[in-house]
Length: 469
Image (cartoon, rainbow, N blue to C red; front, side, top):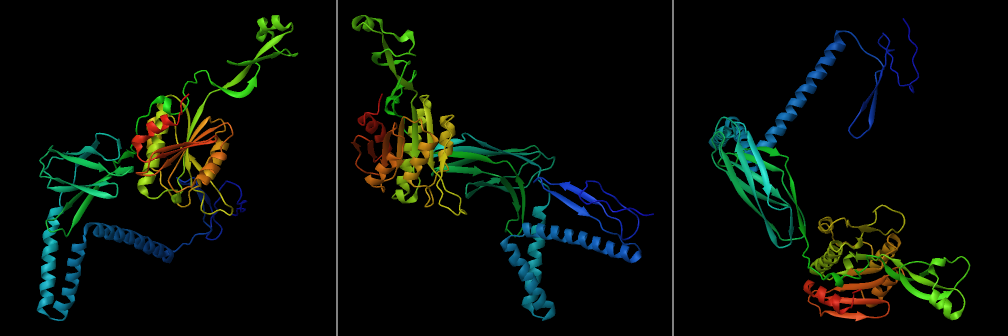
């Protein structure tokens, strides 16, 4: 019996009898959407091949069992437990082999400690553990109250244990008492939100250990919750966050034949609509006169935050700048403004050419915006302030007013260059953050520079800058 070898490029698979001529193609998909193709080129028969295959399979099974046992032992023994195991090994060599009494003492004492610790790990854990937090979003400097609720769902009593609750980079331990069948225990939890950022609470781990701490048994629950620590913000009067009376649009310098804002009266030219003829002026001059208007555009407020590390004197200055940005943007969103909020981004590391980038923040709601500010950090690789305003002008060319927030290190020349990169029709306001600095407002034709020493001065300084409609 003979079979022709098919083309490997075809999806079919073919097999033929014989030790050298059989082959198959198989394709398996993985979770990463890749595929593996296996091809069987031949098979071996006979008792020698069968014995060799059985030995390899037995070795694979024993190796897997050994790795599982080693992993379980490594997870069970603590550092103190490994020291006791080491003392047992030393005692085994020094006592029975060398005949020293000290070796027998180490051997017997270590075995007694290990064997005496084992009963404390008996019994399974059948707990229902629930993590409850009062709030998922807080402001820097506040606390979050929560609780860990544990229910013994088994029909037998549960020995005392310890639940480890990871909180950010720290660890909180909650001790469980002896619990009977159906017993319930609630351990209060208080988390201090001292710094802006995101705190992951969980996953929880229940540990059972002997009184000395040689052995440890852990069971984990995947429940994990997130706490967003928002920056401190201040409420601002609506009229101090730029022009707000724009329900029908704001007039611009562009003149159009028809709109809402009246500009002037001019002589009629062919093509003008007769609806805009100003009959009173026509009667006075004796020829057709029409009205012309200023084009109305809906104002768009932009808030731009530079995150280059060299623009800030210290971390306090950076936190003040982030609080100013969050206050301006959140107030604009609450007022229903058309908002654009962006910060300096980090370019890809492996690039051949110089690259700049910005990161736009969500403005669908004040909550989403404040959540995004929790991850902001200043880095040396972040886009410079001048490049940030250039990219923002290209991304949002319709902005009517832009708040450029930065630290105390950029000089007036850099600030002027950053504002010059914005669109010509954009009114630029630089908010310079300097902790404990003298609050001031400097105005010229092109820009307004506001120096903020404390967050509470922001509303008053904006009012002094006449940033109203």
